[in-house]
Length: 352
Image 1 (cartoon, rainbow, N blue to C red):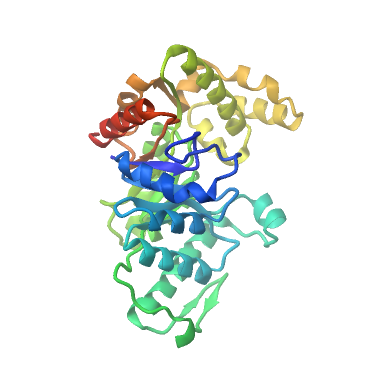
Image 2 (cartoon, helix red, strand yellow):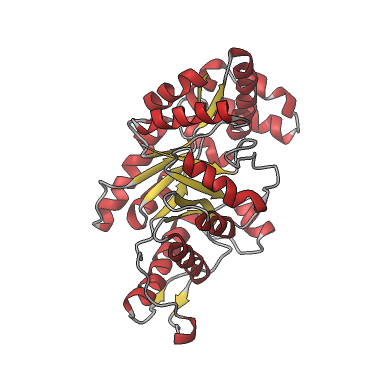
């Protein structure tokens, strides 16, 4: 199991912060170097408050071994050619260490935040990746650019805008997914899937992996090296008192997720559709404070890995060792002792 850390998540070293907090861009290179020294396999960044490609460029310059990637970059507001160029540039800069993670986002954000017309995301994502690969083939192999689909017609590439071949042209593509259709798309055209944190091991095993395997079979693609890169929900701490506080935070996170219609299939599988209905009504009424108390221990432990620092590596291995190839994990690091603790957890996870 490869162990990655999400930039940002946490507090200090290794340069991690919560998604709602601003990222110190001047510290990205320093912190990426610390992540590499802690023994991580990779570092990824999500698209929230900063451009993920620019953040990864800073990390690429400061590291030599660390795999780098977007945990997701939002695909649809960007032309496939624009995304192809960003990934191509990062692959050159990192000397072959970049993975492109793509996400579709939901209708409200695509329409109201980005200003694009909405379309069914599964077929759109399939064509997006196909168009992306057509651009890469044009640059690497010198073949004419020729992609025609429902959303994109790409057939112009003049020498001035053609960066030409690179040493490591095979850029892995991973697609964020929850529903089976998007998982099939990932199997058809991508190199891996990125389950949402609310996807339980059972949901991954019974719903996501079979759908992705079906997609690969339909496309005649191998499935043996298909990646499942997971950012699990974790409640952990150095002692029981701290752990209890983290558990309460996790209950609030689950309460939010179960109220979100896009994530409902993950809860329906476990028979908690009624809970989803209840939470949806509470969220619409802005009764957020009432919601965490409705999350039972059974629901909590189905979706959250819970344990102290001494326990968490074993529990993550037991939970995800059979379903995931990559997991993202970190704890706040404030001093040398915390760094040693995290290094030990990373090492234990890598032995999975």
